[in-house]
Image (cartoon, rainbow, N blue to C red):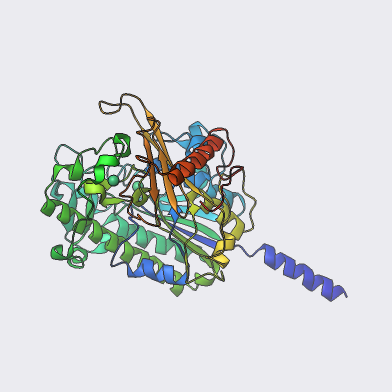
Length: 472
Ligand SMILES: [Ca+2]
Ligand SMILES: [Ca+2]
């Protein structure tokens, strides 16, 4: 009897000490549909790829602040690049901080919180000290070679332009190659204790810098810009276009845009190879079976859609949606894609749930049921927002909000009837036809119901309750 009690106690202790590791891989400005990414594909094939995951605000700093606090932008009050979430939420417990408080070793290499790219590379950026026990800030020749970078729009800094460099030298001389090397060293050093390791890659954010061999994977004659109807822009509200990039294709010709797209794709393949190195190390060190891997981009990315939108800061599908893969060891859904609507604020509660930690107040919900059954019914909607500062084009500051269900995208720009957008993803997945301009009876009904959900949000209620129209 005594030995039975003792063994039960031992089992309890062993289950309590079962602390899964977290490998938290953040990529800056990764578009949803990329090619030549064998290592991200490998992770997808062994985890759950979320094909309808939406970030809360498609811009580096505010999106990262939202993911890492698990709060919507209206709680963090971070809408732009220069503000820290602790200004509004001084005592918030961040995702890595929760793990740190519960005995995990927490470390960051590269960009997890916001950095100005490329100027902030090698510094702490807009980091959060309570989150980490250790931080590493590599800085490679992509920064020192800045004078070699091609920038076809010299009036814009390389951080905001479609700028690029097919670089000499090997992967490990670039910042992202150094980040993989440092991450592997940390895995080797800390393999025997529970860890939360944030590995944040700076590419494919502009300037699109990658070693030359990655450009060869994407021959220029295979690169085409996305197509759209000639009158696509006629039904899009003015505020829907990013205030800092209102000119189609930056005024660049087709060849220059295709060169930029080639460079972007090369940067993605370069980052993918670095992710492969880290995943290989996880296997080699026999950590794979006890490590949860999360891969995410801070937002999606435009590559010329709608006759010339590039980068981010829009509420269209390409920007509001973003890559998200979660591989939890033993999750029954591994190897499958999840078609359900999820939000980036769900990442924090999911990881807390997987590690049996009690999180503080959060705005999202755990995706654990979807990790085990990715196609199960999931009653959820996604909300994404963006702030447009007042300028010559928009006389007043505007907060645009968009809502996504499995069928619809509905957007309000606070500009009256002309500031509304509704797209039917069953018939129009590229969002060419704005049904809000001449709404049918069905479209009017849908918009009314969705407007009520935004009102809920403004009143501090969950946007999914209590208005629940059937089958929208
Ligand atoms: Ca970004
Ligand atoms: Ca249109």
